[in-house]
Image (cartoon, rainbow, N blue to C red; front, side, top):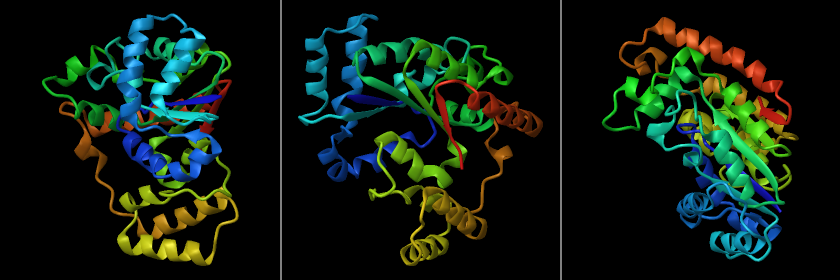
Length: 291
């Protein structure tokens, strides 16, 4: 059995992605690709991890857990999604680093299905926009308290990803940039579900509605119907062409900066993020999905 943990991160379209996957259950279930509703497992997994306290469950306990997660009898690939697996929103920087408990937590998640083939899927985001977006989902905190003293310039997704990889030998780690989602949404869905391009999935174009004008989206869908792309890469080139012509106006990044941050700081964080992508691409056992 394969078990895929989609770890978020927070504010990277994680709920939209899960909704897109859930719309395909009728297609995926007969193939043994199971996408349970989140109410079946999110609280259950947190409670189980707490009760086990790092121990590996017995085979009977693992089977009991699986039975609570899904009623399906044939489970070849199980996809579980929750950004809160790594940390609740107020605690993202609780350990003076980005998702400091993630290596320990992911190792415990893998133990829940001991013997299964484990994958961790993670969407990352430019810290210049990630920090303000996640902070915006907190209540009663100042930015300083939310960061727990973490220096924004020290934030490297590569450090987190490398630690997750080391903590989970034998597991695959699949990563993509939130900023690239309009171009790679279909490939992200297919990596999570393990499906080939020949299998039609619903909502592959869903995210484009947020980035392309209504007129452009209509023309794009008509073009696809008349000129089906031969490969995923071909489809990405088509999307890129239509986004170049029909992209919705983007908000000024400076408008999203927290109080006390300057445009220069946002630009510096963006530059560091771009440099970090090169480090991520060189981590063994990590696949980086790029346009």
